Image 1: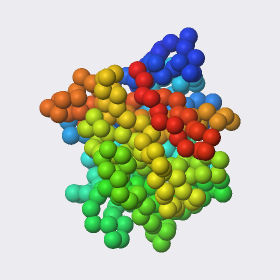
Image 2: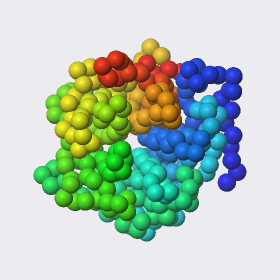
Image 3: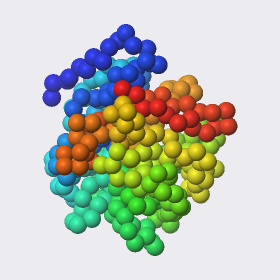
Length: 319
């Protein structure tokens, strides 16, 4: 497919870059960002189809976070899988041992499952592993879905898989990165909260800064203007999680027609203590419930700052 060069403007500095949100054309959601080899790559849910009906993942790349280049469809469930021919959501990417592992949410029968595909390049092609890596709820969990996967690799090389809608689960990934250690599965769902602050819904994202593990998640429904990001911290990638005293990282700004700011990933500029949050929000022309706000979303990026005590300063979403 012919590459599409998106020139947002080379005159902007990184600090001013956020004034050009959204950063990708058309409709995308659940963005995952990867820094690799001097470039940045964004993978996302293909949005705009009724009922979250997208079934393939695209990739965009950039050298400067300002000019984004279309890399094409990197994984198509209808073409590249055998175990599912349904819809695809919320990709996650992890590079390890020279390979790129693309994790994703899909349908299996009447339920949801987590799949994985493997490639030699951040832009694919990705070869599906052939069966789900997670296809059931953890023991003791009665409600929720197996979606919204995330992968975190610690300094010692151990990788962890996170997933869940309605619950947050974690398991250690085996060295093959295509299977988990079932004896390590643990439920980490943050307790308490409300839809106005930190009640867990989905979209776990984990990163580490200065020895502290940060857990971010989405609150409320993806079609709600109130959809927002909350966080907590832990001393281990397996938890337990302590909810932050001021837990809201990112939320809507109705006066700016900015709604539903959540399902995020995080970027640290290589070699620097400079951080960005990459997220989706509802296209304001579709905010009315009759217009399907939950599947008319667009990808944005803004700076994320930390206080001296390591807490995350609330992010102001920009246009």
